[in-house]
Image 1 (cartoon, rainbow, N blue to C red):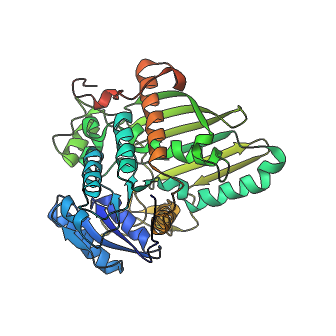
Image 2 (image 1 turned 90 degrees about the vertical axis):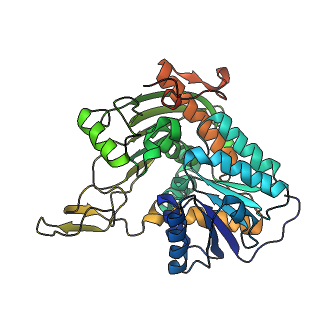
Image 3 (image 1 turned 60 degrees about the vertical axis):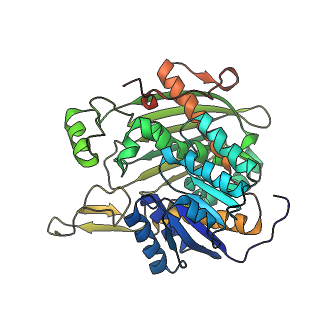
Length: 418
């Protein structure tokens, strides 16, 4: 980007109008200098619903566009948030790059929800398209922007590290009872199972916590990955039937199950050549009071820990409280309506969406490069592919001995039922 005139207000267009788009919308109520001025979804009812929500939240005058090309050509859209399903993202990015390079669009920035792509080959193309079109770009990894993560890292690196040394182990776990939409459950659509869907969070928040403040994530050199996957719950006969009933006949875990549990051990080398480690676990087979994220950071004389379910606010409802219906009005992925339940008082803030979007808006508005870009999205996908290959072949994958560009996880291969 050679010359740039700062904008007083960044005008965003959403591509996608599903669950995650509404989560981003809620978080933007806590962000200044931004409006959501357009949305495109192939489903008319969804895009219209999001446009109505924008008005209700006071986030601007949002047009529901009938095509992606129409959204990109709008003269009131500066930046695009790609929030559509995994299998659509590369096609969306190709259309954005083509429209910008041909002069049909004045969009100058793009942000993409995690994961950046389904394979390393796709991720590299996403990055090349953004760079080739001269777009400022940001990778939307919310967990590293969590208020607890940001505050905890600041304290550890300011107070503990100078006298006792850098942290050497980050642990990250994320678990819930399963995704909302059918495509998540289909390996050939999503690109994997829970490993691709959620381990991307654990990898990046772990790398972030272990990276010195102000240093790029590349200051940690990826060395090796050891991974394991399993289908623990959703391949059982009872749950195969339940899943098909909820998600439709296209989701058949008797024939094509994706993993609902994954484990990772990743080694990196810091600037001095010392080893640091990220451990991650993730699951779609956790039945509890809601989405559970647990993080730890360990060093020579200190530790940091955080859990999204250790909330200050809790509510209790006895079995006499009826009629509320099943829902997620208290916490994402809740599995009960009675009993003692934790309640995050600001889900969008606790999970990092508010500060993530505040950072991206301010960077795009002023022409600065975000601290999380498509380069980081590519690095995460490379690690995910190494973990899949490790699990498939039963061995540790070393970064300097593998070209993972063309690797496709087993569950994503059309010709290979699992």
